[in-house]
Image (cartoon, rainbow, N blue to C red):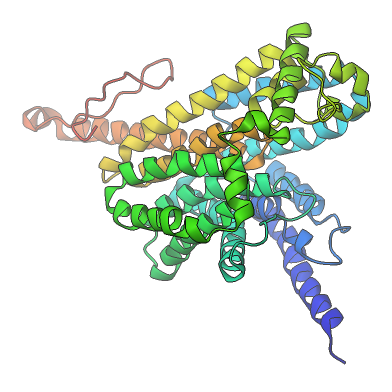
Length: 471
């Protein structure tokens, strides 16, 4: 007997077999469990089936991974860098604001979800070490979201962009705006990290992800994603000028020639950016920003708690609004990572969030300079990929409620991992230089001295100016 039901059943069975097989692997090889957790969290493969959504596969993998982390000796101690300290502070702060929220019964479920994400971010930092594991982590991140770039890009090209691109329902990237931001973040991650791939097929797969992400982003019909795309494309073209020969003509062709053939509804959607005062959706968003700000001013240390707009207290929510109109007379989400944190947790939490965000960008920018050093080029390449991936999150995120997006926190984890790898390599070089000097004895004094970048005694980021000539 054949039919769609059987095909779907076979697909579900095959995916279930793969997911179940990862459970013992997560226990005996926790670092592979981290990759599995990342894949499930970003791609949500179980949500692409008819019958697996109710099976707690992610929980089973998580339990096996946690047990494996406890018993394994294959882990590094958590580096207490600026990023990890701020993440720990945020986790504690979110606990306090949830306990003292307007409606704790609404805040606690979201606290549970965000706390799990942060817990596994710390585990990721502990378990991912060395060049190969970092490479696998970046590949899993890029290809998990890249799946939707390839799928959505091909679909939008075949249908002429008549339909919106959506992510898996019920996930962080379920709606069109969220998947649009995720694709914007994945495009530079795939394009830049492809430079580290020696295998031709994998390198071209990453290039395909980056190329097909362009139409997929455009046909999410998300104005925020469009802003994110415009923010990162010039940086890519400027930083990697040889890519400009490919990127700029492709984008120009898409925006100039393709604009004439874009569906009229897409053109009107993007033109509304310039006439936001006449667009009800945009003005409702501005109203929500005003509510978040006024709540934060009223409760600067606590905010109103996670998802306070879902309490059903329309009158209370509107009392914090700067304006009320017939078309703007009900509560809604902040639609901004900045106003979301501000309204839900207060001004203090927003300050911590901003320090973490811009501090991560600054660290990745420093590490990206290592692209010019053959010994640490892989660190510099992955740092550059993460740096450019963070840009659309900071720009498009101003219009989307994705403050607790696991992809963002993975970039924070990647910055801490790369910093630790760099410091470890520097310490190994310094030890090797000392050993060579001891073995050489007096004859070593006549040999030319090798200058190694210095890490200051406080364990910080070192001086602004490196001694090594490649910096």
